Length: 393
Image 1 (cartoon, rainbow, N blue to C red):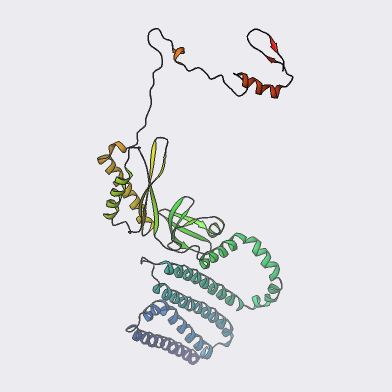
Image 2: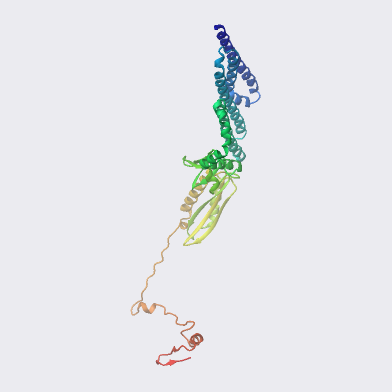
């Protein structure tokens, strides 16, 4: 009997040594490719541990199946090894999914100026990777459950009631499913991508993460705004980097009527020419309004992206205000108040200076007007002049 256990121990040792040797050989072969290409290094990093574990489990399973001395323990050991193999296999497949997604993400960098295509590929790749990992976990859990005879026995009844169960699950997880499908719709419709600059609920920020249930925005003041995916499919929002990152921005100034727009244009040209924030596309000054005692001047400037545009607008505003204070103080906004004095001199009254109302109207004040009125009054008596008499038409 002890010889059977000795043989089993020798078989286990051989399995372990063989698994380690096979893993080392595969790793060495992969390292030979590292000298010529970069992807084998990433593959080794991601799949080294799960591959070694998978080879070791397979070797141990073979040793147990062939040399285990007690046959009564074999069914339980086979089921246990099956479960362990499923878990390690799922780990290895997940590592391969991560490796392939890393290859796609490495080819499309988002830390470059023109990264619209890279942001689209990155967003879709991340969502697909999460979907693949979720599917692998679900399939592995299902496979593990099917190793138990009791679960296989109730499989037929579960399939028979799948229709009712799906309806109940759909009603119970309506919001979850809506968010999941909304997340998939966002990714593949390209309405929203990672690193997009958006304005949502009056907040400006970048898309930091898109999952199957929510979107994380990195706001400009380092806050994080988390919104469900359904928000972006049902509510309008601004995407400032949908086609490109270059933007136009406005700077508005209310100045006095004595301002010189031509001098302001010359100063604007000098300001943007000396600024590294301006991209050279647009620098326009226009008078857009001139009412209520002020002249409204609007300056349009352009920059390569939203943060640069904000800094450029602030710099232009400050430079124009400082220049007007120094060289054109008369053009600064002024509130005017007109003061008048009423009343006459000696021997005069204020009533004498007041204008008399014009009594000539369309139907009163003259003979022609009264005659026009008679066409409407007909037989109605019209009161006559100062002698108190009456005149009938």
